[in-house]
Length: 514
Image (cartoon, rainbow, N blue to C red; front, side, top):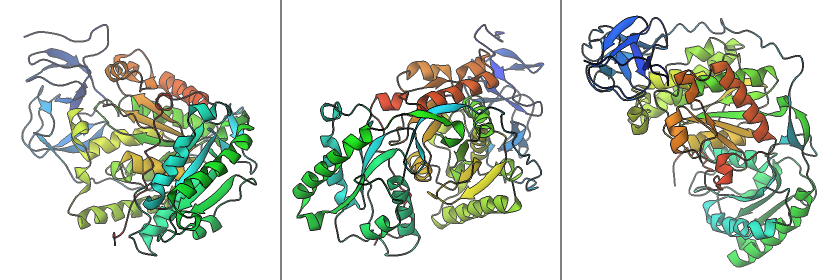
């Protein structure tokens, strides 16, 4: 039997709360290792992967397993100290919490001297973090035309317009074969409207086929006014076909470039930053390092008057009490609970349940149940009051921490956040996500240093130092806030350097396909 406890690179395992009956391995543990965890001498009964859980004391069959001081499930059989705790011996449990709406709400104290970033102020006063021209399809039938137009404006053409970040095609797989009214069409129209109105687009060209259900005219009628020459709409059938539309579209976009290139950055208060919060490819460290570090940065952002958008409703299931307890009003808390009840019904309608959410990658990384995943995911929302709850892709107008109802699938969720006005995305990952999100920059925060080193050209920040003691949560949060400021001011994220983000527009599709 060996005795391998802490090393110069950090602890062998972490006890996250004094009430927990499991700890989290900080490295791969061999069978027979004896560890000092919170004053307990624990000998591992089998190999345990990094990020996975091991029992600290006997846990009887049917008894609650605690992590973060919260229930993450119940033992499906008796578990002995030192055993690996995962899908083979841990089951989902009912989530039962005291929903004392708003009892933990405290108004956020603003900082006396708010920070600034270098943003692009549009003529209507809205602030952009990027300067794109968008070519947006109303229907899948016009997607290829949009891509041909945007593809024309490569590096050689754009070299003459150094202050334009690019021309991006926003395309999707729907827009027809759907009801002419109802939730499905309304959701798509709201999402496209949010992109067409987004301040990160200096100019927009919308293209339809002509006979689709999602007609251009109702969309155009609801858009905010843009500067003269910076908005246009085409229909392929009226232009005479695909080739004619492509040539006409190229000319319209080219005419927008000079005006877009005239934009310059200037100092604006941090209150003009709206950050979408995402986590994907999570692992056992996500709720220990990257998510709580992002939560610290969110608290700082909110104190500076900024906005943070928490989403992924299925991934707060079981941890909703941590949000309702700090809701600014009972109405805000009630709206959140209404959305969770809708999701329970929606999942049941399709023969599923919300505990199906942890993916194979999540489980390989040490996450067992949706309760465990949700408790870690909510940590990225920090500790300030929950100020509003919105439907998918609704415009976000309330500063502070808000919640937007979205699926847990990251591209669909982030699409809703950007449609709502997010001009920056912060995306935590433990397994390794490469997600880009044009026209909004996307930052990747790695939960562990091994991932950061393995995928260094895709990750923007290493939160692994929190696990091994090289960095405190407070230090990481301050560094992430500064990274937000730098990126909002024009510094490219890693996904932008690789040209990612052209294919990730993915509106939430609801309703029957006709």
